[in-house]
Image 1: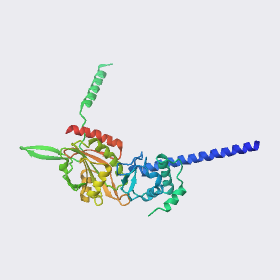
Image 2 (image 1 turned 180 degrees about the horizontal axis):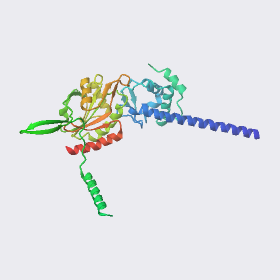
Image 3 (image 1 turned 90 degrees about the vertical axis):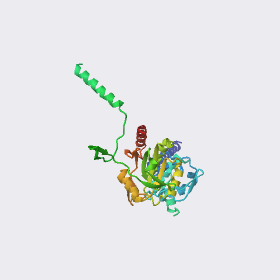
Image 4 (image 1 turned 45 degrees about the horizontal axis):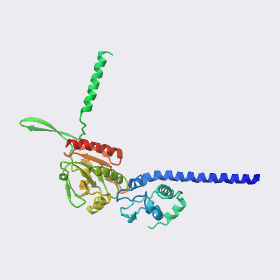
Length: 138
Length: 212
């Protein structure tokens, strides 16, 4: 009886620690991502993610986020020349490349925008971003 | 309290009130020259202020734009290019605020010069303006001979623009908004990337409009 109780307690402690560790990591990504977003993205997409008129598409409330995550991750680093349709409106101003962004930077920015304006409550993992970035269309 | 102190307080109060009642005036920026002329046999010295010279550029509708289009108006000039990834979007966000406030005021104009005229043809400028939602003629975007645009920017509007291949977009330039009065004198230069500085610019525009 006592041993079972002890084991349970230990397991619970582990869970708690694991949980908060995950939370802390998410917060870290979110905060770093926010700073990077302000530096590299907010000039055009604005700090509130609303974009600018018909020139730069919105990120907040955008129907483009959910279905195009891989394209979005690639565009952060490589830019985007194609016309895209966001909320029924087409945008064709080219997005500049930011080749200096590392996979971690991209992961943090993605974590920020998808938690802030998408429906995600989790980290965009660096490993996933690395894999996506390796397979971007040229 | 002795008499001297009292007098002193009166004097200070008087000066303060004098300051308050003076209408606010904006300085005329730039170098000035003293010119001596002979009028009716008398020597007269006049101050010649820095002035924007005559210019001629092509706008978004491939129509010539000259200083005559801004006669009798105050206007704000800036320098940008449509593909600029750095400060231009910030500048355009702020310029839009000015546009929204003054788009129906015939006494105010906005003149945006492209410093990348090879890419920014009238058609490109037209599309850029449509995408920004600019419908009023009060905001003109112009392109033209690159050397002429750089020259008027540096010598007349007192802003810098130079090619720099190491920069994103290949051109470095200032984010200044230049406030010009109806006599083509520069009355203020503001950082067009800072909302607070643009607030100041809009206050100064009101002061200048009262001079008209």
